[in-house]
Image 1 (cartoon, one colour):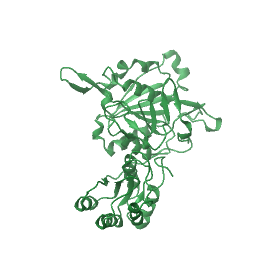
Image 2: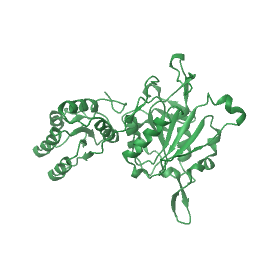
Image 3: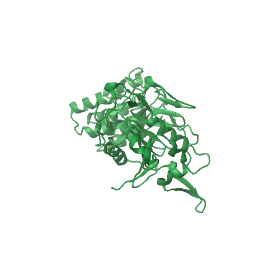
Image 4: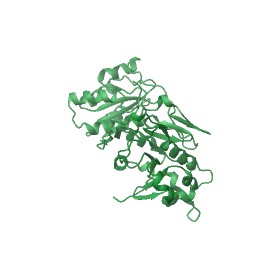
Length: 383
């Protein structure tokens, strides 16, 4: 597969040798989305523009004091066409370039950005560098676009560093310890002045600029005149863990959203899919569900044949407290996992990743998976 890479800014040649070893470097991965569109008056529609020329529309890039390289996927896509195969491609690109770059910014369409951020948070095990996803509600060619501010600030956060203790300083590709370490070293979404933990984010708005929210976890940073970091909530820097990527994902999962009047044939047809391995059960309020005998029997039949099931609330905020009410106590008894305050995006991608690592459906394997599903493995849920 062929990737196009372009240097978006550069140092004067006289300064390059002196500064190259201490300058931070950011790899930007462009996947597509509204961000890279322009209006074509002849066709009267939005069309992709040559993103390799993005610095012409964003001359501010040349003034940033760190190196920026752009890598464009061979086939850019609307994020509505996002698939696990692209997540694997992104994880592999980050692994391939991990030693060469200090941080990564992924330009992505907004519709499925929270899914991609959640998936990458589970796939990039041992991550100790920033991976920021951002995009735009309006194309970069629009006069009032939010693309410029989102991109520039995401780059600045990705390149932001603290002075590092001598024994904790990062080691560069040449084996030399650097005098700094990243402020952020996890997968995040940056949008409309807010930095959010990636697997805590969800898209909440389609027509306003404040597209993303994190109802159950504080913002990691707020960008105003200055960028203020909420340091107690940022994952601690862990430089000693090697990066390992998880690329085996199972597609045999689904989301079953409950609603008043849901019928037995609908539930049984979904849970009866032969290859089904995991279900995100979107319940009411604090994790409540119907107590009809046919409903509970359908769930138990699926669980007994090795389907992993997690209880997630339909509410934007709050958490599942499975067993608190009679209407959720039965779910606990039959083996539905309590999803606490996890988002649906994080729950479904976590299922894909965990099930991809464990093909076995034995009782012992299912017990291990239920334990992992019920506890945070990448900051996606509260203890």
